[in-house]
Length: 381
Image 1 (cartoon, one colour):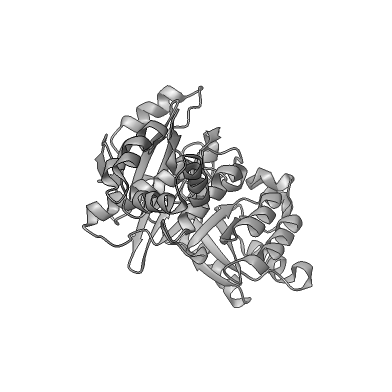
Image 2: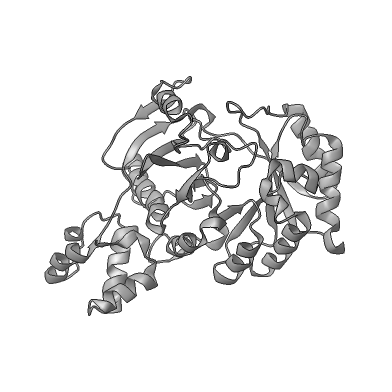
């Protein structure tokens, strides 16, 4: 089988080319053609020798992810459903704003963590994505958006690993993907504009700090272990004190001088004033000095069978005021793309749960309840 070049960071591509008897600069040329120019075949790489262009297809390939559908929200958010084989699909979301374009990328087909408030985890885990499947989401989205918007400059300015899956449970594939995103010969993202979200895989947080420290977002969602054990089962393995210790160890290498904590607001579960005060105490008094942080409050996006509802806006605002008044910078996330199930916690794809696969696939075929444009299928992202 040919080598998928999307699986390789620059050093991996250099090693491949050196094994073919080619010099390093040829690998750099090909890397730029793929990621900066969006080349989809080797004949388009016109500054390569013709003999190399004819040789490459015998050894290498560029494997795109088939697009099952694309949905365009009224607010400009775009969601792709990518086919990753064996009945599995992953979702990727582009969120445009005035000063940035953020792409939310998936790292797994499904998720094994099983947080109560997450529709992806509710459907179970199928498999880890390969590096090329992670990178392809950015590659296809970036170059589709340039064509779609009629732009030649970079459209995706920020990447968040906050899609389907727990990125740090797929570390071997994640690390080279991050290196591609950061490489100046590819997408040239700064470490501050590349965020990995984790539910708290403590050993891998330490490895990320050593190998490729990017911005870190930690899914917290509770101010004590008893509640977090229920909401985020991983907490039973890595409880809050261990998690916050890992955050403190991460900070010296981090591109920002704070950790972002994500907190999903669940009515009557974790949203009361006493929860806010307990959270304030936890974050400010850990190890005597506290954890430099920012808290992002996320309105819960309901999904069938969750048994949970979203906190009312006044409750969310009161919770935020308690934290802000206590000295912790706190924001309330603006919901984007909820008319196409692209909002936080809604990414579910078509992970096959054999118990209700037929029902879910039928539901996927139904028209959405909101007036959004769906494009399916298409040859390119």
